[in-house]
Amino acid sequence: MRLCLAEDSGAARLEPLTLSRPVYDLLLGGSTIQQKLIRAFGFDSTLDEFGVMIRSHLAELERERNPRIAVNDRGWLAQGPVVVATARWIPPDRLELPGHEPTWIGLCEGRPACAFVGPDEAGSLESTGVDFWFERLTSAAPSYELGGEWIAYPWDLVNKNTDHVVRDFHIRGGGNVDARRLETLALVGPADRLYIHESARIDPYTVFDTTNGPITISAGAIVQPFTRVEGPSFIGRDTQLFRANLRGGVTIGPNCRIGGEVEASVVLGRSNKYHEGFLGHAYVGEWVNLGGITSNSDLRNDYGEVMVPLGGDPVATGQAKIGCFLGDHTRTGLGSMINTGTVVGVMCNLLPAGPLLPKHVPSFAAVRYGRVAPGFPLEEMFATARIVKSRRGEVFTPIEEQLYLDLYEQTRLERERAFQKARERRFDNPQTSALGF
Image 1 (cartoon, one colour):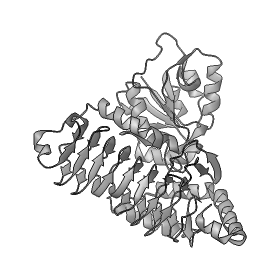
Image 2 (image 1 turned 90 degrees about the horizontal axis):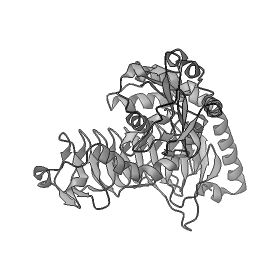
Image 3 (image 1 turned 30 degrees about the horizontal axis):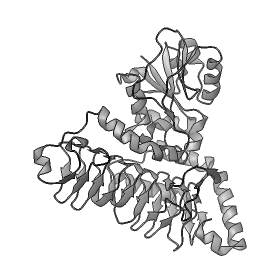
Image 4 (image 1 turned 90 degrees about the vertical axis):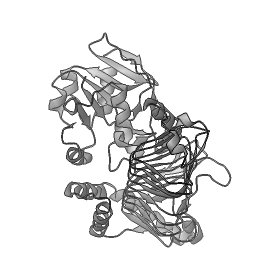
């Protein structure tokens, strides 16, 4: 079977997380959306039979990272029958596909989620017309409800994460903790809900609480003394926990450094939160550094609905518990306090101001004295990115640099609007501006 993952127009609603990566690279539970889709379709991971149709500004970086994958290649699509799946769709645990039609549409909640088509239809798919392509097919081919769920907004990833940590734990085969491991750690709850890779290092005086769900500790992870991990939680490969308190519903991606208190949050990977401070109901990108005592609010003090400023415009969430969403290569200074429902773009620099910081910080901007302001020059940001990546043994490549140059132009209008609003608030009500309302 050939499989193509396609981004529809909903990818924009997942910014800033999707500014610098395709939707299917987002982490949910213990795996990415791409891994979930590949697993659901029984794909054997032969890269020659796998393709993607993504936003054009991401195409070169995806080719660099995965040179054997067909990226925005209509010629590859036209070589034969293929399943095209929407990258925001999370299929059910047991996906049952129609097998008796030459062309069919799979639905989730009545909307097109995937399609099986021949080479002629496949070759007509374009990265800028995925929605129209599915709409046209739906009017001409038989449709079948397949189930699953949609990722529409960033907070959907946070809200669904706990269930997917549990699902991925059981799909991987459950627990494996043995008597040798139990001699050096404290276990609260069932032992069959704890999986520790043989290469992980678990120091004495650590506590794993599986009462409310399973815990996965991946290869190369290090858990230092006086760390407590509550399930459901997933700790990615080569991640280090420093006297951390993980309170459940947590996914930490690969190669992170995490300390302090974390609850119901996802950290994509290669990010630092070494020190004390609270991170709750949040989604944090890659290469993010949270300075000591950085904390975010995830509940209004009147328990009301949280509004989230996507692109600077407030969006009703229908939720009372919403933390923050931080884009790649963003940094916070010592003692930063992040407001409920905050959105921060890529390559931002947040400096503490005493009160809560603004709720909307566009990409490449800074927060100074409590207000959104122009960020550092691009070359200084890129120099920092090179240093940060070199500390993990990686390189900030020219193609990555070009991606961020493109993003800088792409987000220019959002930045200018934010600067104008900051100026207006400064003169109209200085105290309200400082509080980030």
